[in-house]
Length: 238
Image (cartoon, rainbow, N blue to C red):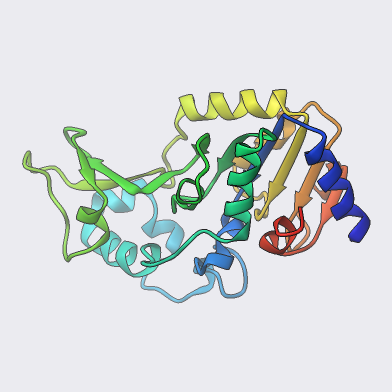
């Protein structure tokens, strides 16, 4: 483990083209639960399965129940960036990191100071009308009661990618560009089970791929370095 950490630090120190691709595990040390661990969101009891509630068809069918879930489970007030978010922002400022590609919707990378953040699944910190597309502040959806509505009568929704919806093609195109061009690709805090995001790893062309996750992933055998450690602990050392 120690040798792998030192190797990763050396890769980063010697490169000006590092790309980071992260998932829910990056934010767990900030107090945001992940989705698939024993204590994760998908293993908590709810009236409907979370995958169903977080789908486009469910949102359209029962926005009131969606928002009950949204405000209780997705909105966590007072969270702050952890050591991983902060160190990634520093690496960008130091000229090592080109981009952060994230599956998270919490905005913590930007809160830490990262500038070039590609949000594959959108952000809970933005909202818009599902009918007329008028933008709204996040406060409208994240707090209060009932279903928030636009002046046009449409339901206001979070600017996130729900199940059954495609990822934003512009964001995907940029993510593919950075991954293809990366010298060092670090993938952290993700089980690499969610597609199409997980498939991005196949576009990496280099030979410095580091996978950082507490548990094994389906792509560990493809990696040049595998580190099973909390990502915040790792980034505090590099």
